[in-house]
Length: 183
Image (cartoon, rainbow, N blue to C red; front, side):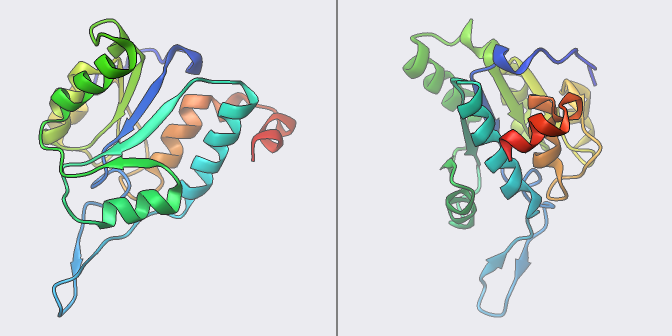
């Protein structure tokens, strides 16, 4: 773990979330028909409401989305519920992020510093290393934790996304009035 100092929220233009092990506890339940079920944290929903209100209040030019290797439609369904964009079935996350940054900014080398990445497993390493800042959950793979900027106290699927969003916008240092303005 680098224990890198986190810059102020307005230094960032993009937040990218992995799905399994970030929004979920990295477990899958399979019923007798072969359908996969996952467990997510409801607190993440409120976190995205807070983030959207914060973006509006402070006119923050921020994009955020889920980027998952997982092919299962459950990624898309959860993203729809949270009202965020998602891209699933992406095996090369580093290449995807580079193309995204080139499309949005015309280049990726400088703009990558404005990207926050949240991931937990080995397939996130190249994205973690590419992006300007990274968070990992408490239960991330050890190599991911070594390469991430900050390890949060919550596990994936157990409040990690909410903790990250609150950390990014610095809810801990807001007054009660400021918090009520964004919820």
